Length: 402
Ligand code: NAD
Ligand code: MG
Image 1 (tube, rainbow, N blue to C red):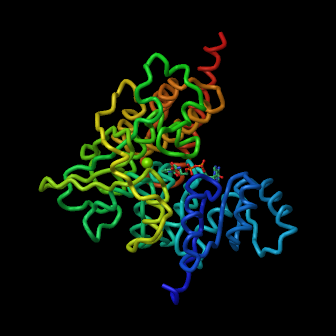
Image 2 (image 1 turned 135 degrees about the vertical axis):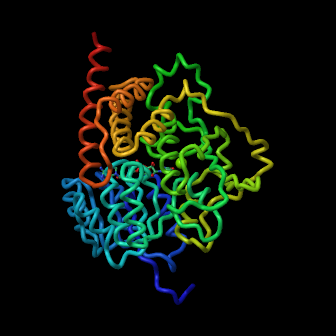
Image 3 (image 1 turned 90 degrees about the horizontal axis):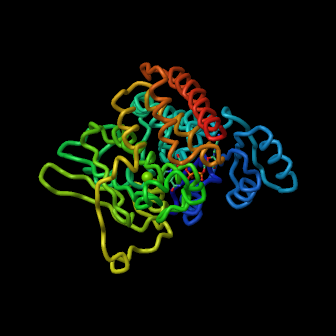
């Protein structure tokens, strides 16, 4: 390993949960990886700390004022770091020639442009930002095929499925002999909360996931199971299977991260402690294996593994995702945009938890669906769906006050 040149990496969304876990794994292998660029939205203090530890060549703040404050904050340090701002800055560092790997860990639609750029430039794309793939699946997979980019999933379920695929499998192919993909889901914090109490749950309760420590948006998505809906769509793109071949399985222990059922009756599973450093280390080192800092799985402590089918009444968002996938075109982008607006409104205290699905359903019904064959069509659908979803949220607020 020692005489290999270090691999240059950009971490998009470096200050987030996946970003920090990625940097934790990278820091365990200083002879193997070099951090070229880090990006964040507004968290200047977080970025400053990361710059001092990881000494990237570029630091990008999506927010222009935050970029200005980072420049000021870095003044006293003898670090040679170029600070960039905005979407152009994010796209620039995703495509740098000295960058071989891009960790796509921005949350939501904001990650689409730089993630697409990494694919276009033929990088090894470590994909955590599932929303980008949900919005632009056909375009994104096309860019991957054209450029020869290596797409490796970070989402724990998809990383597990990838590990259970036949040797030589490439993302987007339809692997021979696969009968079903079994996508596991913990069921989140409200798996057994009485249904009538769901109207009153708070953001803090929704973000307290029983097994995983994640950003707030994906935590709420896990509580509504829209996360699993987005993951079903993600699985269809990554593994080239029809949606009927993807089965969601509730598995509250989050020890089996997903399974692949083969034509001969073999079912392969990937297991591990619920710690994102495992899929991150897998995708960084693939096809080799490196230390991730994750403690070994103690099966005696786990004791038992349970499985059940998700209840559609409890998790209406799951069905909405299936509906959007079947509609095709820009429908998944509309679904995603409406979900982002509704989740933010819930986190801001402006929407009840059980209204998240209502906002998404109404937005899906109100927005015209067109072919998702250009980035412009996708972005237009995103903007219009956000407008409609915001109007829904305001409508719901007015009803609450009257
Ligand atoms: P997070 O909220 O902890 O971090 C998000 C990162 O994106 C931060 O660095 C933030 O600064 C940046 N960001 C936010 N808005 C931005 C904007 N408008 N422009 C540019 N940057 C912006 O989120 P997370 O939990 O790390 O999740 C990141 C992505 O990974 C999501 O797509 C999520 O679905 C996916 N994912 C996360 C986990 C997990 O365990 N956290 C697991 C699987 C998949
Ligand atoms: Mg997941």
